[in-house]
Length: 257
Image (cartoon, rainbow, N blue to C red; front, side):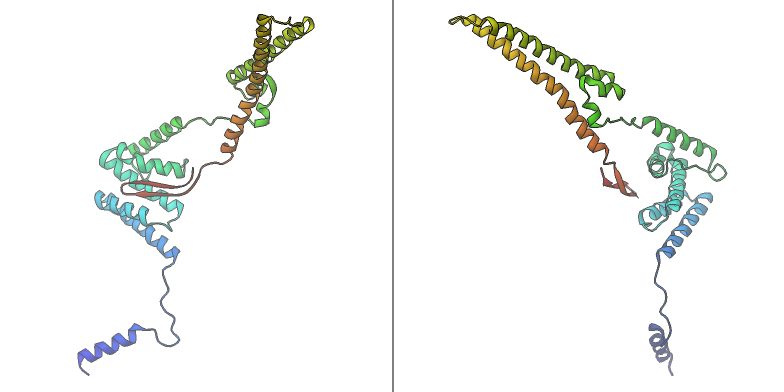
């Protein structure tokens, strides 16, 4: 048999598995994760050997393509990528990936036996800066708590300024309404002489002032309830991040905001 025919026969027999022989196993998520882990180890070895550019590209590829990567391995990859970027251009270059790492795991700790001490110190400073810049969570009272009259709900919630405003407007409206009603009662007792346009106009003005005061008191009580109900409903729907991906040109975050 000529060499060409022998090669064709070998190709035909190797193209399909023999009867009863199981086909080669397909790639599994575990195998993909193991491959990513090997790539991380290879990148670390390159970085320690001084090949920072190639190591950085490998880690960026792992983070972009590693959909099946475990959280722990993904965080290790981000830590080493931040280490490389810090070594190349300082903390400003590494801040994006390190901030992503801290957003995913706020308690992540750099191993000073593995990473350079100056990088570990810069990472801790970044952690402190991010925590100090986080806005303080505003406590939102329950709507029925704000419904307590005279701003008492705001005082119980530790917001005296809002309590003074709400309570003051309610008191002013109630007092105005009562004073106007008392004045109208005295006018009704003696009556308004027929043809006394000034007296009639005075009566209408006082009645309008009383009505405005009563409506104002109700608004000063009801409007805060509506506002706090909306805030309370929004606070009960926390932000949900479904995916966080690091791309060469930025970060992609998906979820409900």
